[in-house]
Image 1 (cartoon, rainbow, N blue to C red):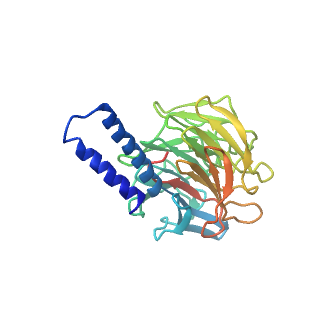
Image 2 (cartoon, rainbow, N blue to C red):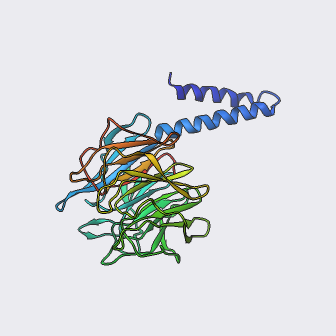
Image 3 (tube, rainbow, N blue to C red):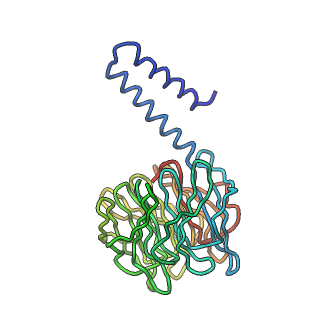
Length: 333
């Protein structure tokens, strides 16, 4: 009998007992604790990271979607693919689906592919980005996805907003602090953070988008160096910005603490200097995958959030590739 099934039986018996007599606060609190534990366990079991599309040469763009199961850190490749071979997309996720937007395939793109987590089927939604663009960044709240910046004949500063409830797209009045592409973005539960990039000089600034009113400010904190072509993910308490390029390939990992928006640089680094990598996160770890450093990569590095140690998984991407986009299921921001 599985551990989770045993929890279901225990919880069911506890709930059944509610109908049979007086209820003490300690009883209800115990049941609540069991519910919380079960919810966490189920989220961890069903949660996965998805890495989509990518690039290995001017004639080799991809549409495949690799899936990394967070429970056992194994990788398989979905039957579903993106609607076209593409690279330099951006991605975000609701609790139900991942959204892969824009990018470069047969020219600049504005379409939005939706990957439904329940059955891992892919459709292309009616809404599109406000312009054809590649090299933009993306993050999400629980209700909305945001796609910002990028390049489309020139550098962009717009922020598109995708409402998950009806999949309608609008464009914010607020913009990024400068026109830019090749940024990286992560989010807390309250705000999105858009960092670094190119316009055409390397950047180190961090823009903050407050979800409550869609207003944009600039943090006093900056990245440890000016760079682009890097990736980011987040725990519930901090964002992590890793790898990239600023004239040479990088392996450092910067940490943005959400509570006071201070930036530090971890002792841990990626397993190699690399740019054009992708990233996603579980509740307990960030995963940095693929990329380029004179050769295309398929390595998956893992950063454990509670001790900020980095290891490299036995699992790898299905091919060596750069310029992928990534998101995660399991209701994880």
